[in-house]
Length: 298
Image (cartoon, rainbow, N blue to C red; front, side):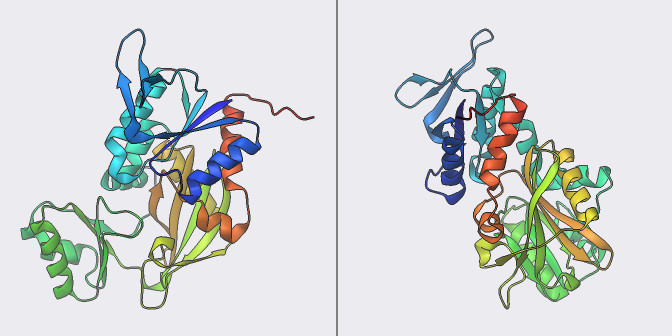
């Protein structure tokens, strides 16, 4: 098959691995830089063109790996490929939905998935009420547009929480206020979902003095066996978002597992490095199953 990786940086570990895994499985892999693509919107013959005037009309599938800053244009491209009948591993609708943190949390709650108590308000006048709503300090303040642990602040006192919330609001930033789960002890579980199955999981642990377990924030990864309930939550969360591939972050609390976030472009480096599993190959395999492609064996 001819499979395109739609992303921004060909040198990222995850992107290199997907190209490599696809080629190992006998596919022709193409890297498409999101910024170099442009669209012809036409009722009878929609097209995607690439820098230099090349028409991308021979693709069987697209793997979208869209960074948050490129969500709007990246998802427009994915929708265009979908309109051309090209299979996209994650759809534009699913990516858009999962990137809207507030909307995604509302959808997850509707489907019965538990999250840490979360507050959201538009006006700084509600700051005190917002803080008490989630049980007071210590609490987490999250930028809605943040990623990889950036824009996430731990406020240890109510006064600090008030200052952080008001500072973000003065910048016209959209934020969530969330209860701090002390017993999680700076650890979370990343379940990697492909199709309707958790194919691998790691425990991410924050470095000393840090509360964010993200690998990009210096966290370390180790292999973990998630419980049946954690697997169920991860699969249900991915399904709720409409994602075929997702990184689902869960923390263990005294109330049971709580869902933190669903990521539509989960990184492969931490999980492949810790588990030794060929996660990139599993993502390619999901495309092969969907398009009923049989590998040629000699």
